[in-house]
Amino acid sequence: MYSCLPLTQSQSYLFAGLTNTVYPGAVHSRFEHSLGVYHLAGEVAYRLRAQQDPDFPVEDFDIKTVKLAGLLHDIGHGPFSHTFERQFLPRFLSGAPWSHEDMSISMIDYIVDKHHIDIEPECLKKAKDMIVASTEHGSRNSPTEKQFLYDIVANGRNGVDVDKFDYLVRDSRACGVGCGFMFPRLMGSMRVLGDEICYRAKDYLTVYKLFSTRAEMHRTVYTHAKVKGIELMAVDALSKANESLGIADAVQNPGEFWKLDDTILKRIEVDERPELKEARDLVLRIRRRDIYQFCNEFAVPKEKLDHFNDVTPQDIICSQKSSDVTLKEEDIAVSTVQIDLTRGSSNPLER
Image 1: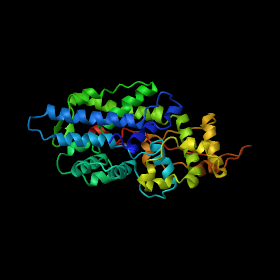
Image 2: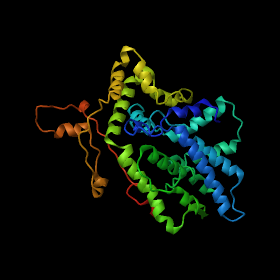
Image 3: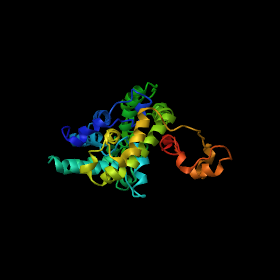
């Protein structure tokens, strides 16, 4: 699998999207993250087998399948990771459902067929099920046995999985911010009870640190004002170039989708066609650090979240007071960010 172009192409995706424009150390690739999850998934499976009773039902086949899921779980990401999925594609898919997890499944099928990979069908099927385990689609088709294996890579039950183990430590180190979460402590004590991976009661704070570290990374790094400004500009550039380059259409065809990566901005920048001028100008502004101006932010009180409607540019236009400057809707971009402990308003540790 390592020699297949769609997989090694993930070296051209920065894992943290456009975060490196503000945190220069965040240049690790999604390929590195995938290798990390591959390794940790195998370690968890091995340890669960070693730390349980001798007749515990984790076989070599299960370990191979979990590792495969870890390696391929993010192969369906587009350029700039979640920015592509959550900000760019909704402008063109008209509400049609699309997720990088489902795209990962399509990409895996494409790789296997294209490169004539000889792999056990049952192994492939289970690996794909593990990848979508945390999605709504995956939860509707949850397995009836060895369900704990499906919680290792993408845990839809409580959110504790090796995907977070890897990227939180990797991103924290790359961005130069502290990380108090220590996943080896959890891996050393995990057990399977009632077909679910469990942890010692005294590790409560370590588990909580996983979620609080994630929230802090979103608050200080992933949603940094400059990062969001550059993301909005990149999305606008992709949108203006979409008709000429067919960017959004590629998600319907794995054979074209794998060719998309973070170099898409460079492609726009060097393409001299007149119809790409607006997109080129935006990319040039990013290069020159002429970034969309951050104006203000408002934190919605927790008790009002359930009744809060997203603010739109039109809302801001309607509420502006008379002045020498009159703003239009196209002058304003609103970014709504929800930061929680991965379970909305509920505490994931109470699951």
